Length: 337
Ligand code: SF4
Image 1 (cartoon, rainbow, N blue to C red):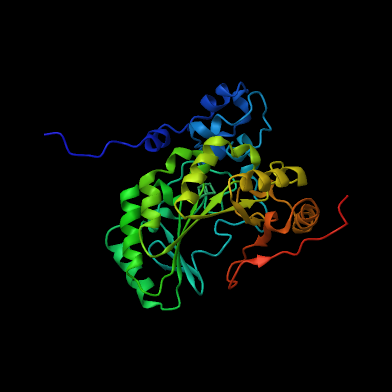
Image 2 (cartoon, helix red, strand yellow; image 1 turned 45 degrees about the horizontal axis):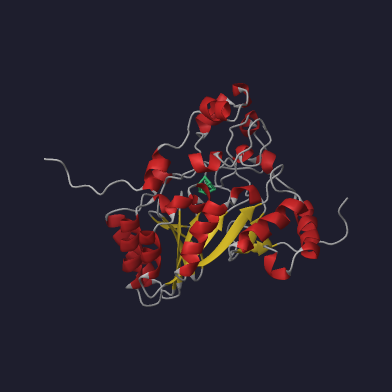
């Protein structure tokens, strides 16, 4: 007898066919295959889905979307101050898949997979195998959250939590809504940027069907990532009452200039998304070549303030292990070269 399985959604097909062979990616972009470091790729595989590749420029090795995913030899450099756990998440672990850093909110590792492997990812060395939050571990997580009456918000993180099926997300959100002291559920995700078809009616239903206020924080770093398909996905979320914000990472050679950051904020707001945070790089081993020093970042955002209204200027921040909140960096004015 044929098992009664739901048919695979379009986004799941796209996810399953993400490109993992660097030669394939580079051939499509009409670039030489020797741009890739085999060592870097072995340490953290290449993974990039088709809709994101379609927004890359052919023949440009410095394309800002390509350089976020391409394994480079510089990743093998050992740099002082860069570690495998830059945010001290091992110390903040409160159970399998539960990371509790801040008083009123807790983070759940809802998935170990991502649709795209970003080379600067602070969880590129994260021990996902020890943090699978399924079966009885989900019940343990619920008990932990129910026992801490100070918690107001649960954040689904990963990996990318939207790799999880709509049905499972719906079950998890319904379970959380049973905990009286929770008020909000937040999903941090890059999936709607890289596979916009991930925003399905079932997902928006799952996010909005309970009393918990739904928030989605997108992760987009460059205006070239935002096209009409991404805009349509965002519209669906907003129309159903999901608050949509964006956070970006400041990355050397990708978005470390005022013109790009201005266009990013404007492109996001075109679809009603407010820029929330601009993070300086988390010092994760393998990503040092993306770093922009704090003072340069502060000057950039100081200049950004002169180009945009305040509500379109993201807060510049660093996450410091053990601190009770994100650390805001004050923008500087007038001392950029
Ligand atoms: S967790 Fe986010 S930043 Fe890290 S690889 Fe996945 S999508 Fe990229």
